[in-house]
Length: 190
Length: 172
Image (cartoon, rainbow over the protein chains, first blue to last red):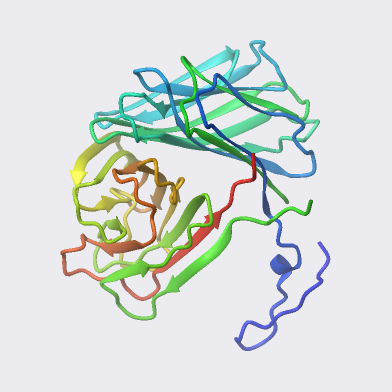
């Protein structure tokens, strides 16, 4: 990264502000905000010029039970994913995993329709998504809380495919995304 | 179209003395999510509490997943008069021993309640992953942070930092 700006920050000495020289570390790529319920949310033609992707989701299910946020890459529906999670539900900590899965998921992050104003949340980091030599690993922090019960999850997923990720399809484990659900995609530069 | 950089610093506080609470007021409603990064220093091993918009109503609830080095478990609390970000990953009297990264989603949305996620880390004590709910549809315009409750006598100590960032989503 070339230095194109030199600043002093008021302290003794000179500070080379390479951060300010290229202030595009995190850029919004696209957002889907639902005006009505919908079965899936997809991002296609994802630009390949970032280092990592981040997904920020704020979602709700149309069903009467909490649902997982699920996703697949590049239209791949084969058993080429694995997942692991650590979950707390207010009573205890639980862990589980699955190999040879057909999807990646963030557990119970879409709040049931019963709680009309409550939405779940998840932040997903997809690392080295455009690297053609690596399988694709993601980490997720997510949860839902409705003042009666809640779940907080730390989980990870892997797509056993070295192809760069060019599309992501999101969908609930059951039912549809409810109105005002939002999924935002960001690119992080190196 | 040129991209607009996001993850913008809205405000930053670094304490050079003690403070009963740290306030971020007049938060602009132009972003989609907020992220706050806290490195806390307390009187003596005190938790981080928060309030939105100065509200002391019983609107706060949380579910916490924690690890202590010997135990992993989970607790929750409902209808609290203040929110909480730590349980075992709480600040100590040592500068730089603790941090909290807190994601406040859709903070300016006037249709939904406010869900937030945080990780709190203190290597000498434990870690927390927490989901919080503020059961109000009001947009968040201020955030207050206290250590050992808003009604207690403990203060934030010198060396405490809190930085508030705004993240703007792209267009549909």
